[in-house]
Amino acid sequence: MDLRHNLNEKIRYQSLTKEYLPSALECMKNSFYKYENVCNAVGLPHHPEAISELEELTLRTANDGLSVIAIDTKENIVCGVSFNKVQVKNNEAEGTYFENFAKNCKYSSSRGVVQYMKDADSICDLFEYCNVDCILEIMFLATLPEYTSKGIATKLCELSIDLVKKLKQEINVKQSMDGQEIPLEPIPKIAAALFTSNISQRVGRKLNFQIAATDSYDKYFYKGVAFSNVIGPTTPYFTLEFKVIE
Image (tube, one colour):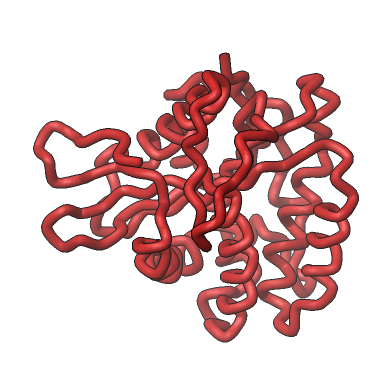
């Protein structure tokens, strides 16, 4: 689904499709895994072999059909991506999957990322806090370094929300990665994200996300070293945020 062009026609925004999935994964390798705060805190850039394990999680997220991408129309590459996961309340199979995923990771860096996601999500139960049964989690938000400061991350989040609005109008915009139609339901009631940098937190402010909880990186450790020692003072904490989708 083609969502929007920017004014100069150089960037096209659309739903993630099977055609662009390899390019979206490459975008993650060249941005998120290298530069995202938690990835750096657990040493992921120094252990590229761990990335393949995280890609399994990314692919599972893509299968929900609500991820969005930014495409450089001249180069025909994905320059930004938001991998969005549909989370359902009391989905025991999903919860067990993520717990087992962390346990079964062969590499400590990939295990550290997944364990952080699980621990950070647990500081506030958004299902209870917002009284909803379905959430769209903006799980992985990435922009290639050479495309930063162009508002791409903000627009990807905005368009992720727009997709859910279409679902609420009973327009099934979910994009299948395997050719099999994805059911319209479940339909998320809120969008949520762990914003782990001051940059992504500014995205939350621009789009009027509400902050459900914050937590200091001083409380999170990898091999005995506090995340804050690696991330530095620019971003002393992460935020768990949400936006009600009308």
